[in-house]
Structure formats: C-alpha cells, structure tokens
Length: 229
Image 1: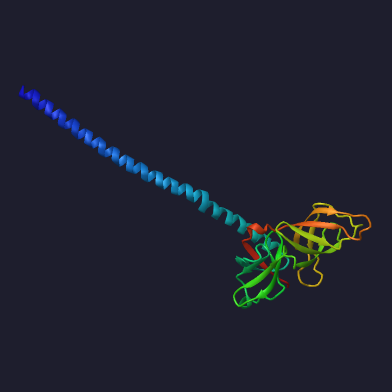
Image 2 (image 1 turned 135 degrees about the horizontal axis):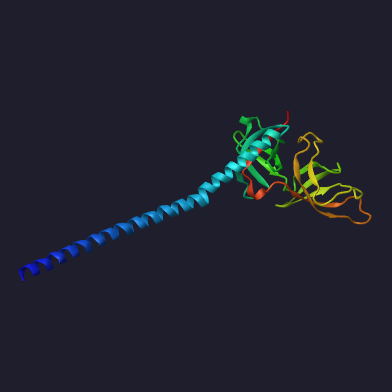
C-alpha cells in the first residue's frame, strides 16, 4: 500500500512538474511569438516604406545622373526647401543663393524638363517662379514644326497656354514644346511640355493651344539650376 501511495505521489509530482514545465515553455513560446510578430511587422514597415523609399531615391538619382551627363549646359544641383503657402505649385524656394552665385533669371529644371526661373535671390536660398504661374512667360518652339511662340502659365497644375502660333501652323496633339533660346534667358532645347489641346477658329490669326508641362509639379524633389556656358 505504501509503495502504491509512493508511486502515485511520485507520478503526481512528476506530472505536476511536467505540467508546470509545459506552462513555462508555453509562456516562453507565446512571448517569443509576440516578439517575432513585432519584429516581422517592423521588417514589413521598413520594406513597405523605408526600403522602397531608398530604392525609389536611387532610381531617381540614377536618372538625374544620366540627365546631367547628357545635358549640353552646366547644371548645379539644388533642393526644394518649401512651396509658397500663398502660391502653392506656382512659387517655390530652393537651397541655393548668392553664396552659390545664383542670379535672377536662371532657369530651374528637373530631369523631365523646365520647372521655372529664379526671380529673387537671398544669401542662402532663392525664390523660383514656376512655369504654371500666370506671370511666367517663356520663349518656346514646337520642336517638330519649328514654330515659335510664348508659353504662359494658367495657374493650373497641369496646363499652360501656348500663344502666338499662327493658324496655318501644322501643330498636332503630342508635339513636344522646347525652349527657343531667344532672348538669352534659357538655353535652347529644354523640354517644356507637350501639346494637349488645339482649337482653331475661322478668321482668327492664332491658334488656341494648351500644353501639358513635362514636369510633374506634384512630385518636385531634385532640381538643377541651369548655368549657361
């Protein structure tokens, strides 16, 4: 009887010990599982945000490097500091100023094309009028036909007006519009945009033409100042 009781007590103690050990292991596994879940979520966040941002930045920088290599004029890199709160998407500030030999009238471009021109220069930054602004007028040329006109902003993010193109000119939707170089403000050949809409009216001397800017002004990041050589 004593041996039976001893055996029962031993087995009970062993079972309790095993049970406690199982509980302890289970708790550790749960804690480890929670930790791994947290680390996995961190990795997912980095993959979906930080790593993707680096990858996109590297792609943009490769494109910019290629653009700078091919450019026939000197380009000075600049960073976007801010949009003007009163003129959103029409006026910006960049981190280059008098100390960098920036002067009024300098062109500002991206890898896609012309963004605007410098209108005010301060010691460490400059104010840039974008081509979207109604005050901005640029001498341009339709690349295919060589017709010359004036591009003016409309205040709308994806539309400019191309003025003084004669009605007889053979302009087509999709034609590339580039700087003419006339007046000496910008070098010739910088992409400005593409013809998006054409309206011809009887007895009118000029066509009414809309141009979609080449630059995506909602995604401005890396910029260059154009220095004519």
